[in-house]
Amino acid sequence: MAEVIRMPLLSDTMKEGVIAEWHKKVGDKVKADDVLAEVETDKATMEVMPYVDGTLLYIGVEKGKAIPVNGIMAIVGKEGEDFQHLLDAKESSEKTVTDSKNITPAEAPAPEAKAKAPAADLSSIDATVVRMPLLSDTMKEGKIAAWLKEVGDSVKADDVIAEVETDKATMEVMPYVDGTLLYRGVEAGNAVAVNGIMAIIGKKGTDITPLLEAEKNGGTAPRENNAPSAPAAETAPAAAGNDRQQPAASNDASDEDDSRIKASPLAKKIARDKGISLSQVKGSGDGGRIIKRDLDNYTPASAAAPAQAASPATSGSESHTDIPLTQMRRVIAQRLGESKFSAPHFYLTISVKMDNAAAARAQLNQVSPVKISFNDFIIKSCAHALKKHPAINSSWMGDFIRENHHIHIGTAVAVPEGLIVPVVKFADQKSLARIAEEAKMLVGKARDKKLQPQEFTGNTFTISNLGMMDIDDFTAIINPPDSCILAVGKIEPTPVVEDNEIVIRQIMKLTLSCDHRVVDGATGAAFLQTLKGYLENPVTMLL
Image 1 (cartoon, rainbow, N blue to C red):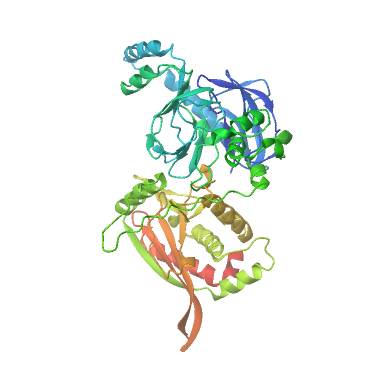
Image 2: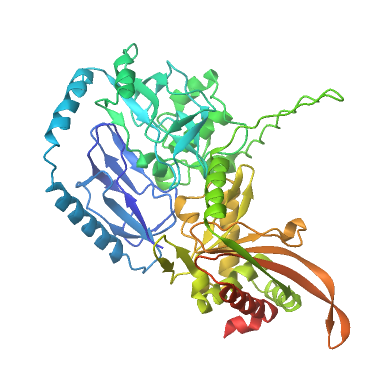
């Protein structure tokens, strides 16, 4: 699926960016951490990366021309993929915006004139407000996992000032301006609402009180980094664990030595954290640029510090530990609570003989380039069954039901902070080996907190598998916006009666949770019967 790369906000006063240099041309293969282009702003020339792998299908403008902030820079996708609909959507959006600008309420001039007063009062303050960016589609606030800079520290535009924990992952935030860190909105462990003040950066000694007063009174500062859709694209997920510590002051000298070496911001941070001199690292990026994987290959990743052992409770005394909610856990509670109490769930369970599937899997794994799991078989079988039962592949939209014609299957993955659902898109069009390869890659990225938003959104059906944890069967809560979720239990040798004889079969129990607003009992049962047929006779999926 083609992805649009938009012009990010790279400075506080930026309205457009000029393409100083394209490092890739249409038709080139690009990786997520390749430098796509150099963009010249009113402050500096910055590098822009696509953060997706694929082929460069489209370039918005030629070198030397400008693109407005959030305008289409490029499109990356599969070779030969049709992307015209993305450009058509852009033209339609621009027309809507133009039309809406011609409709101005009569009352508008009054509040506008009123708002100009505080802006004029703040214009002389040499400081920039860094606001909490929107880093995921469901994010409402971000929790400061760690501050990497202290008040009074000098910061550069591409320095990482903080790690922010969202409901999906931990991301790095950069200020995109040079200066001194004058203010931090909250301490580590506390949350900041989206668009709330994270930090203020400016000239050392600047009085920032008027900026904070203006924020309290609903005023706006003259210079704000309040559109970092850019940080969501420009930052990379942070490593998991307890190694989120401020870099030691002893690294300052090496920072100066490394400042002239061509390296990504993330690579520089990793080098500082590990005490590695970038001059000793060979870069594999464009023009010898050092990127994250070069640091990973240079030295093994440091093991996460062991969790601090809890103090043993005195014998016979009561004790407890209050665990703060992570952003992921908070959103899981909110969304699944809404699903459980708004969608009328009902449950259907069926037993499946997996003997033929086990035999087919063993044969396929002898020739497959990637190991095929039973879960991959289930994804493939569900994709085929959903084509025959489109009602299961639907969503409740309030006043209508949306029947999806595409099949995107999500698989629930447990991570320390909770659950995340990476999505295998267009699963019905992919081979078993391709599904196995993609699912393995997505699960790995989920556990490393490296999933990109397009990789954990868009599901039309979800599978939750606890069979590998020795669970016989269970019921799952529907994952919005799906209307159904399949709970998968373990495969276990079980005596069954066939032709009046007791034989041992490999039995797996499947439970389908259905939203009764969309799916009726007979519809759900028919889907399970079709799914059972594919799993018990995998060869029928070839028809």
